[in-house]
Length: 314
Image 1: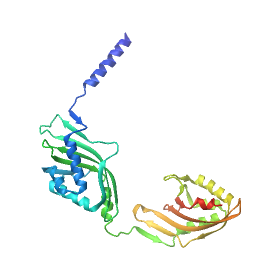
Image 2: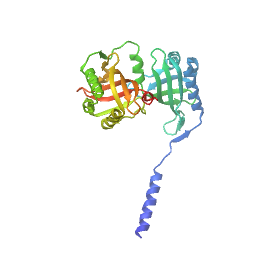
Image 3: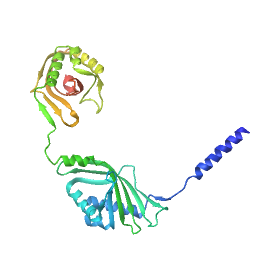
Image 4: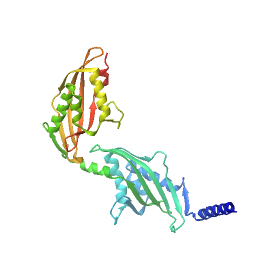
């Protein structure tokens, strides 16, 4: 009896759950409103302001969906249509295309839709290169369109990350971003660690790096790195396989102290003069290092640039 009661309760719960659902219109994958929206977008990319305007209602408004302004007036028909020419004239390789795997929806709501409006939602990728600054646009956008019963676009609400425009605006003038030093204690650190390595003093070499320092080089996969312990083992093997005749600094290191992000970076260039112990072959290995420092003067990240082909040359 208990089992029968349990089954009855489960069945009743399912009926009630499904009974709570209500439809509020129809979603279309193909609709005249979608064709209007995509035709307008094509004209916009082409910079054809007149054609763009032909798809818009007289009282058209465009709004920024991510703006913090709670009293937006919106962009009217003339301003929006005119912006098509602005984009076309200022952006090379300009395109707006469906995001891969996405397609627009046309939604015809039943409730509160006495004007017979259609909502079209799109997911697209906007791409191009700003002609003046060289800033690259490659951003996803989501737009909502309200299309009236005359198949004219009444409203556009645009959702996109606008930080790219900050970079464009900042790039119109020359700006400094900190100082470059040719003498600094962080430069001294990079010199000391290289010369400690030249003398086979691996413990001293590693002492200039923080405990959680990470290491990468141009021959590794992007984003791949090694720990301090892994690097120490690799460098020990290097000392076992190669005799270091000398390590010579090329030119002088630069220490860059950035304002943005409070970064600290030493760039240095070296020639490693080596003898491969297995066959006594003499090798000169150019090296370039980019070392990131913390506020206490410890190296927290190292990026190395060198050719392994030279090390393995016959």
